[in-house]
Length: 443
Image (cartoon, rainbow, N blue to C red; front, side, top):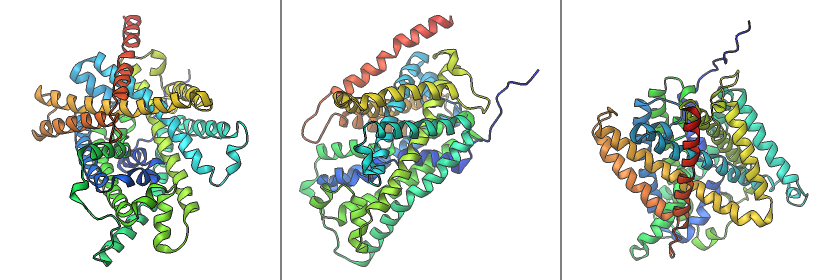
């Protein structure tokens, strides 16, 4: 009788795991973020520093949790260990939805850069939808074929996407070191305002969404109790330093009004100092960046339901892995749901609904950060985490940071609205009937 047991594929090592973290954090949005931050001036720089510090705190929290509980599922496992399976399920349910909904935004953002080279995509009915579907399902098939293959793709795209970021950072360092008065936006203390910093933090936190990426596919990571903490901290540190150098260079060396109206801030910045336009080059790297981010998030949207099914809170159907030892069923189910949301996006009447769902996706990730920080504090207080005592202090600060950014999700600097927070909570609670139904079926 043939052996039907899944083949054990190659595991992700430190560098592939780090590439997964970095690749998920750095997507297409980073190439346009300076334009959004331009009107906020030094408030944005301060917000970015706070975001990097918050990200390092989160990296330490996730690393400590993964070292003690190196299981697939990441945030679900930590929350369930601290507060019980129902709480863990609701956080994981919300996070899983944010994964496949958020992938729609990444896919459409990547396609928008492709249209730079093929403008006819926008004019031919159905062509953009067809290309986006092909892009998504190609990456789903890569992830079904094997974690090592997906990890190799992630490592290559991460290296490539960092080249323009490093190039901009190098220009900034050179300009700052060669002149004593080069900034176009000098620091004015009276311009610093907490509401504006809060609004800027909401934008900059988008750049660290994905910091938890290494904790989810723990079952496919080599020596996870050591690799995940190192990769998470290393990935956040590398990304934080690059972000600070890149955004500080662009925000301080380009006139704010010019930057705010720019559709290609990286290209204009490089062109300003090299004397030629770099739009096409930046567009190429933006497409590569989008593909890398989409690949990493697709990996997570398959691993999360697989881990939850193995824990008994999702249907057993999703617990089975393919012959390549990958969560093929979770990837296909998530891909179908993702495709449905993508179809909604191509109906003009659904555009506002789509944008609102994307906002919920971001808010749901912030709730996941908060729950993981609180879980670390409780587990350490219960003497179950075994981390240094400083973890309690870091966990509290990280929880405060998460609450601050959740509040900022409904704030534009002048007007606050609680709708994203309210509907994010509704999204959390909406999973409870599913949990009770699945639990009853299993019992």
